[in-house]
Structure formats: structure tokens, C-alpha cells
Image (cartoon, rainbow over all chains, first blue to last red):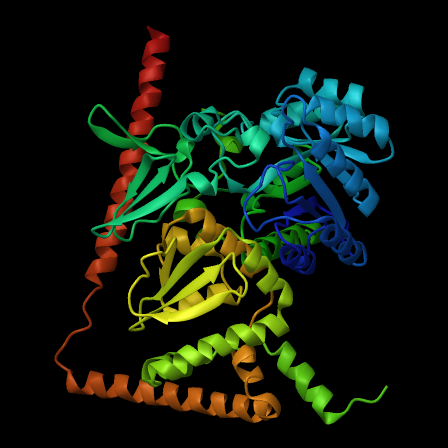
Length: 330
Length: 235
């Protein structure tokens, strides 16, 4: 068996998706609870305590690790759900928890010192002093880096901090400082960082009009797609805005991140793990994306050329980019 | 350990991953009398309450709403009432007045979605799936369905009781026959219209141009903005 090239960390929004990820070749699966304690708090999604226990047993039985995201920020005076989530994850045998809030990190450090702690991308730690702070004060073993760094900047952070880094390999391109989607808060009155959804489904609507589709968030029209034009998520950062009489994507185009062709660069930068985004996507997506990345990683571990990836159809807008890895943060 | 014939047959059926008999299902859904189809829909939901109790419980836990499911290649739709017990599925000709949301796509797309063969966001990006109305209900429904391994043909087969293997074999034979018939009709159509050249798909070409223009416009705007920032910095 070839040595591991990079750890493949895969999403599971449901127990079925967890099974799909493990079966498709994930090294590690991440998931969250059915409440506001994780940043993918959508209806019908996520795990209860029993489902987590069963999922962990299934994954561990096949040599796969399970991480539990408790990565939103508790409001003042209501920390109990976050503390309960940490306790439940520890009790269920999770391999690590993914945290963002300082108070939650402090609780996990003191109450469950043996439980491995990862720093969520929601903490938006993108420089060495910030990462070192979490490493030194809360014994954080791994940081999930925001999607705003070039490969060179990732390499510098790895060298400067000396802890494991996990980077996004497939999913959305986030032009905002991660976890600080103020435009979404402005349009919906809800906070992505404390309520767990950047475009809450309760505030999203689509309207069909003469073959065109309007996408709206909180009553504000963010885009209008022509007949047959690939659609995108109704997120403010991917909205098409009219300025100087012309509609254009001011912040980011509807395009998906796919780093499958630059895995050797990420490996050379010292990255430990690759994160596949998509807990809100289906098990069919998980099977497809994890399967393609597994084949690519196995080929690279053997020293052979990875097979061509066919993931373009899975990306937002039907287009792919290396995001900030090659162009930096614009 | 001894395996009886019935056990082997059942396990083979459970593991069957062959594509659904689309032509047969679409054909039956088109020609069967409406009252019979309505009773069939009701019976399938009742069967699923036994074969997938967790699914029905999760559907009942959603916010109360009516989701209108519209197969674009059938002359009618379905109204799925969730957030209540029992969950109800009824045949409807028009969108019910109380419908909270509507999901539409071809029979093939809706079946792929129901059985977890394709991702709904992927279908949405491609514009093969249309969602209007209460998005939260649709997202909840999608997530609840994706938790379960469903096969519509298994649920229909379960209605046949002990005759299930025979019904399945009959279904496969019917599907093959319909596919052959479809191919023959297509060949006949081509022979009847030999002068009609195979022209380009103008609709698809137009859509491609729209997409390309939108992407180029966006890139141009980004380049202009970048240049403006550079000019400002230089100044």
C-alpha cells in the first residue's frame, strides 16, 4: 500500500453521506449536530447524538476518522448548546472537534483535554501570530486555512506555525474574510457565524420569469439568469450587481474551487489535509467528488499521473478555478 | 449457515442497482386511469411508512407545507403534504392553492433525485431542476430524502407481495419492449423525414452564447476594476 499523499477530509451532512464518503475513500469525515452549533444549520441536515455514534462506529470500523464541527459563535448568555455539543462529540468518540469561538475552545480545552482540537475556518485565522495564539493557548493541533491565501502564503504559514494545516480543495470560492459574511447579515438580519447559514433557506427565493430565473435573498434580487445559463447560489458575494448601467460580478463570479490539478503544489507547501466542502450537498455529490480525489491522491502516492477529473458539473456555475491559490486574494 | 431460495432472491433484489425502468414508469404514468394512479400513490406512501419509517417520521417533522412536484413530461403533478401525520401524496392537475413550494423537472430527473443518484445543486446549476416558493421546505425535503436509500421500483414491487419477483421480471421485460419500440419509432421517424437535415441545436447554441457573453462581461468588469485600482495606486 502506498503511503498517504495528503489526508482527504470529506463532508457528511447526513448519515447516508457519511457512509458514502467512507465508502468512496475518505480518510476523515466531518459532520455537525442538528442545531445552531455548526455552520451548516439547514433544515433536515446533520446528526443527532445516536446518528453520530453510529456514524463514528461505521467510520472507525473502516479505518476512517470523524471530526465534529462545533464552529459557530454562541450569543451572550447562551453557551449551553455549544458545551453540550462538545460533551456529546467527546462521549461519542469523535477524533477531534472543529472549533472557532474562544469561549468554546476554552471549554473544550479544560473539560476534554484529551480531545483533539482543530481551528475552524470560521475563526478566519490567516496569519502566523493568530494561528500561534490558538496553538499556544488552546493546544490546537490543526488549522483550517481560509480560502484567501496563495500557495506561497500557505507554505509560509506552515513553516512559521509548525502545526498541521488543512486547506480547501473543492467547493465554493469565498471572497469574503471567512466567517464574516456581513453582506448576508445585512440582507437577512441573521448572522452566519451564530446561526449557521450564509444564505439561510428561509430567506432564499427563486422566481421564474419568461424563461429567466431571478434569485433573491431576503427580498433583494441578487441575480438574473438567462434561459439555459448555468445558475449559482443566492449568496451576496456572487451577486450580479448593476453599476454604471452594467450588470457584473463585483466580488466573485459563480465559479467553484477545484484544486485537484495542483495537489503536488499543496503537498510541497507542507499542507497536511485537503478539505472537500459540501455538507449541504447530497450523497451523490460526496460519492463523485471524494471518489475523484481518492483516485488522484492514490495515483500521486504511486508516483503516477492522476486520471482526468470530471467534476466540472458539480461546481457552482459549471466552471472551475484555483481561487486564491494562484491569484492571491483580490 | 443455510440460505433458502427466497433469501437469496430478496438479497439480490435489495442490492439491485440497475437503472429504473423509465420508459415503463413514464408510459404507465401516462396511460393508467387517474383514479388507479391516485390509489397507487397512496399505497406507495403507506408501503413506505413500513419500509422506511424513519423517512416518514422525518417528513412529518418538517414545517407543515404542501410541496407541488411537477414532472414536466407528464400531464399532471403530485401534491406532497409534509409536516403532518400521515404524510400524504395526491395527484393534482394544477398547483394547489395552498402549495408552499414547487419543484419541477423531467420524470428522469425527479426519479434520479428521489433515488439519490444525482445531486440537486448540480441539477439546479444546470437548470434541469426548478424550485419556486418556500425554499426552506424544499431544502428540508431534499435533505430528508437524501438520508434514505430509496428505490421506487422496490416500493412498487412491495405492493405485489409474494408476486414481487415475477412483477420485477415482467417490469424489466416491459421496459426492454418499450425501449425497442421507442428505437423503432425513432428510426421510422428518421426514414419518414430523410430530407430534414440534422441541424444544430439553436436553443443550446443560444444558451451557450448567453453564458459566454455573461462570463466575458463579468471578466471584463473585473479587469476594468483591477486596472482602475492599479491606476489609482499609481496616481
